[in-house]
Image (cartoon, rainbow, N blue to C red):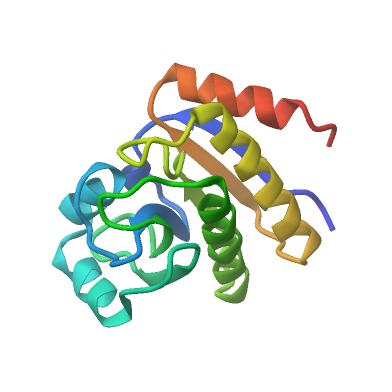
Length: 171
């Protein structure tokens, strides 16, 4: 078993040509602002219709939909907060563990992940990077074997936080 390629880049999540992207979702699965709004705008109304059929879900869970008009085939919605709420460490950890479980179950080989919870939900970027690193490690230990995990972040400061977190672990 070879380790997946882990990329950490500053870029636009909704332009990634991957099997799945992760949405920083609320538990009502309403595609409002931030990452979810960008997914709604680029992906079209089909994604929200699928979200309506799935939701609401519990905070800390995830749901998968098609990618609509996105270059990605699927969207995994990691509900790390209630609509208008804040993200907690437990909700982020649980929703990302569930998102990576869904990726494993659905045969996702390439995935693009934003810094879930760090925008309007107010979660600290450096702590998000550590939680994401730990969630990836748990998913790989549980048997998920993706080819590439791509963290697509908004700006160099976020990219630096993720690079520091992932470089802190010897691979």
